[in-house]
Amino acid sequence: MLFYIILITPITYFSGWGFFGHKKINRVAVFTIPESSLFKFYKENIDFITEHAVDPDKRRYAVKGEAEKHYIDIDHYIKNDENPFDIMPRRWKDAVDKFSEDTIKAYGISPWNIQSMLYKLTNAFKEKDLIRILKYSAEIGHYISDAHVPLHATENYNGQFTNQKGIHGFWESRVPELFFDDYDLITGKAIYIEKPLNSTWEFIEESYFAVDSVLSFEKKLSNDWADDRKFSFEKRGQVTMKVYSREFSKEYSKRLNNMQERRMKASIKAVGSYWYTAWINAGQPDLNNLKVSQETKNNFKISYDKKLKTKREHNF
Image 1 (tube, one colour):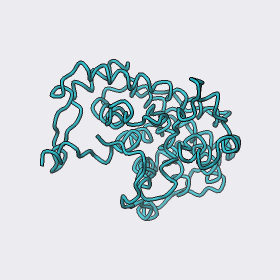
Image 2: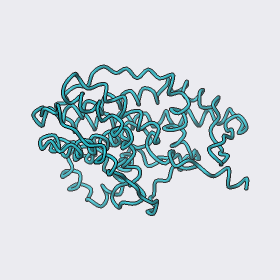
Image 3: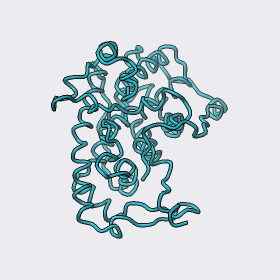
């Protein structure tokens, strides 16, 4: 029984920011939108955008082709210590021509998926298709937030190559859940993004160059802390779970200069800005007095069983 208790991990730790973080990011991002019919529409539908922020993760284990949308293992392309961002073309066609579509999909398509989602959201605004506006708004928020997580930009996504298995959920879920109430997430208003694909690559690059700190600080801290200080046990429903202790989590966050807070804050600003950009590019359609019935919202549900096995498991 003890063996079972130690190994079990919450489902929310299997994904970027966890369910908790993704919902918070989408919800706060609504308030970055400048005063407009877009802001009014999002505010009226904030619960939908919040709850459906996690739909892409619900599909990861059920829909083929979903998993690779959440990450890009950019360090896979490194040769001779080169900067991988100098090697990887930014445009999809150029990247596929250089490395092949199978290779690109095998190591993640995050930047191009965000570009595709922005296109879909823009078209939904043009057509004033309200349920598609809400669906794509919620989902692009998820993908943008994932791209702000350092461990979504590396093959060593869960510390499996450095004897740090479990660091993925620790960084993106455990720490934010513990200290979210202390975060200052005031970002200022969303802005129009002239070149969204370039912007996407910029925050992915920021994520990648934070990977070394994410791993090295945890490694140094773990070397100094005994396991009985590093871990604790918490009751989650009827299950007792082994988790990183509050004290260890606090010290890790401190050594990272509150990186999770900074990346979450950047995610919020980016999500709001991509929503705003899609609306602007669609011609700023007037969304006043357009309503999505509660029945329509209630009927829009994602309910997938976990069936597909992917290569990116983030548990202990």
